[in-house]
Image (cartoon, rainbow, N blue to C red; front, side, top):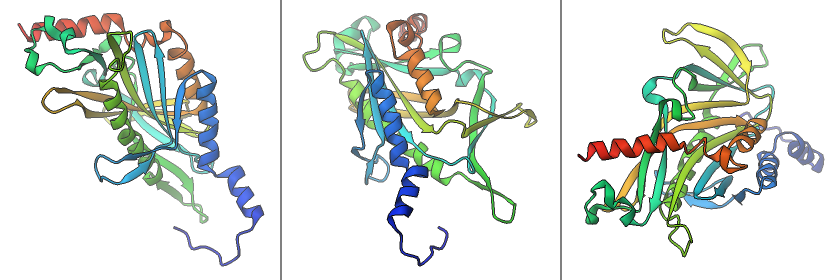
Length: 298
């Protein structure tokens, strides 16, 4: 941290901070936008970090349910400045990275036709939506590295990814609780006997502060940096649903980095109606996933 001046901080200093640099004020703008689309949101609660065991505070957890489809978002907000924007370095997405998983959640009897012994049955089954049915298409740009880039007082380039990585880590950690909640969907006197649930970790930054650059597989830059509203970065992280005896594991393939406009576009496209949300829960992709399960058990 830079050495501080000894001058007393005044009300004007605090107002300047609130007007220009406050993460909290940016969180509120994100929260207002999400609630404007009738998305249920929790703001600023505590959770236990699954790695350190320490209490941490999440920014926003958002849930949208349409029919039997439920989407949960683990949203972290970072009010980065225009003199220190975020650059995401991308390459074409590989075929094995072109997937996202959703959970089919219901009472264990829902899985009897898969030939799973009753004592092994779980309330949830992770299903991989792959290839053309996934929202993460093969050969589309996928983020592999992030860095905030600026200039020092002497004109040299300054690069840092620590603050962004902290938000990235918090989003992935916050998703642990959301995966646990998904396991129990429909368990509390719900009229639906099954759900299809998905969890997406998201880091949100202000508009016009997110850049991407594209490389080929050999490391040659094939596109100059350009402003964007959304970059998906491959993380391939697994989470435990349920218990170790009668549970399952679900993989979150990507973390989303979005501007406020990018998040609004995601909500407009996928969380306003059943047609949009079905793009996250492809009927064809889910049917193929169940067919693969049956083939694996025969």
